[in-house]
Image 1 (spheres, rainbow, N blue to C red):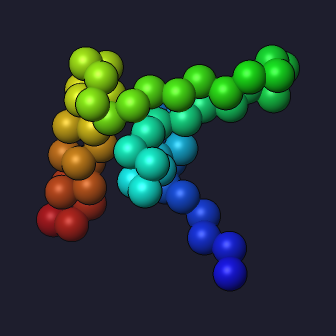
Image 2 (cartoon, rainbow, N blue to C red):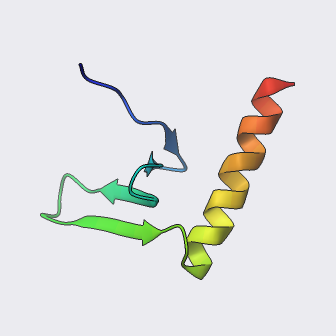
Length: 56
């Protein structure tokens, strides 16, 4: 079974690994932002807020 992970601001949101990930097709690398980093905390708060807005 294949499950598509949610996306937010160009990042794939991986709740299991607690990371935001962004892959660039033109570069052979993937950017990782851990939820517990400062940038990750900011993105996570924005992501959770966007989910709450969708529920309303």
